[in-house]
Length: 168
Image (tube, rainbow, N blue to C red):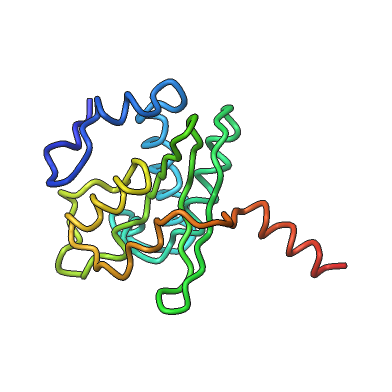
């Protein structure tokens, strides 16, 4: 059983489990991420151990969302547009009043000297928890806004609707 509490600022597996285990077990998320990393590494010719820490968020989250959806889990792929930082995507899961973020490529925002196999590949938690974890691991403060709640949540469904409208 993986325990993220060994990492500064990380959530323990039992904390994560209490938040969403009834919805998606951590191992299922981790397996979907690992499969996505392998697909992207093979397709892009990238080193497997670097896929999660490079700018592959759209590809990884799209593949993960499809995999999780195929086995019955209702996750959204949220896409954040930021003029200064560029685009970033991650998965979200609504649990009653909480919204859980699953970000399998958060390490792309670490300074290169901080990227480490010792850090979790996937950040999971509420928006505030993910921001806190990312800050504790060394992500700059201006990047944390990517995980903030917005009045309008732009998802993959919205992006697909816009593409269809443009094709008309």
